[in-house]
Length: 230
Image (cartoon, rainbow, N blue to C red):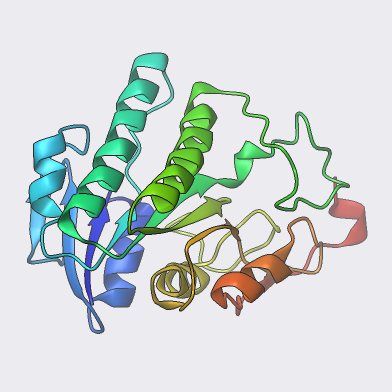
């Protein structure tokens, strides 16, 4: 399988490159060269022609790149997501895994004593989060109109320097690789949204949904004492 990874030089991108490079044919797209990846395109995902050329001959795309938190940056991020989905559809890529965020269900609106699930209405509290809600909905539109499959991953907290999770909001390195691989290879998917976190004894997120729809079974698990839960 040939996979384009946008934001390939970032924290999650480089983790996926290391996890995938011995199994799949990878191409990176970022503003800077991607470490340890020979097929590395330097360019801006907000430029349609750059994305269109980079996505040629790809079977799947993992879209991680995001511009920033300000309004003007949010506009560029939304344009970038359109560029990815439209290029994927035109070039015949089968599936797109889109990096959304668990913060579409923020603690400012959903207290931490409530388990997050896919029936909850997103309530964005920043321009950045608005771009993620936009991306999820644009992905759904493309799957309903075009021959394209989309899995949106509501990523929690990922840190290159922290492998194992200590909180239910965190995603380990190994689970990150397993999760995005399942996003691309699980059969029978048209459009799905899943949480991108590791397992935890504090069941803040509905992990059963990801197991059911894409076969994501996290291997790492945080143990949080009762008196440390918010």
